[in-house]
Length: 313
Ligand code: UDP
Ligand code: MG
Image 1 (cartoon, helix red, strand yellow):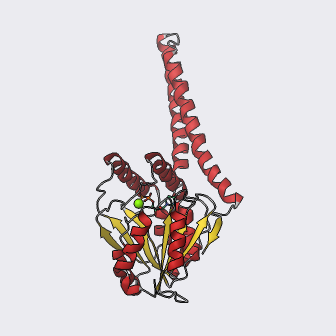
Image 2 (tube, rainbow, N blue to C red):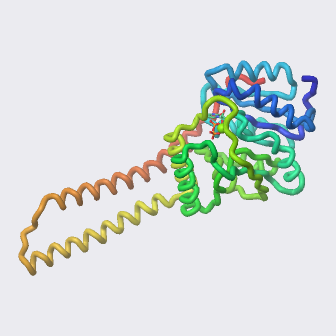
């Protein structure tokens, strides 16, 4: 391409890519078409998150042909959060947008988003108004998760909000000033506040390739969000302990009184066994909850880098 790279681009596109060999050429073409008005004022920063297919080769050749394309390539797969962070740290533009490489975040929305942010908003966020093409079970649990987060955290995670965002430098700096390693961006965005303008769009299916999210991965990711933004699980564990304590006193009283009045011998091992099982279950659960927080503290304390760059261009 004949466009030259400006010293400080108006807009940086940060694009995390993991095994996106099929989507990338389509994505690049889409950006060229939809953002032709920004030509010469834009940089595209691809972050290859340790892909095992031809993603890096494709990015390299795009960067070779077009001076507005830059890239970083990780030494292994560090996950989308790390890839986004690296991109946000490396972006030089006055305005910065994050979008997926798979066509699910339409670049066609960017001019409107840019206009909103230039017009006084700090961030333009996007949310899907439907979940077409998604397995119903997944949609159901996603909705339950948003409802739960609403109740147990102080932050307001917008249902269907994507990571597709466009922000100004002030907003970006606030994001980068958060050093935490257990990054859960869906929560960090609302946590830092600022003025966000929402754009809604219908869900678009990937142009090619497979989603990297299995149900199990999503489930773990949602737990990540809960533990990163709420200490309610600890309170729940304490309350459960307290209730069981009260219950055990009442039960003991009941047994003593029954023995005094009716002279019943203590009968049945079944009830004893179920009580023991129940109590040890609650104990294990509570220890597990505490353990989750300890594990998070452990990751923070180790201070390991959140990603390692193997190649840059
Ligand atoms: N991605 C990444 N590292 C990962 C997983 C995903 O950089 O470990 C990228 C992926 O290439 C895509 C974006 O993050 O550009 C979103 O991934 P995906 O489309 O699988 O998620 P979904 O859109 O289904 O939420
Ligand atoms: Mg996707």
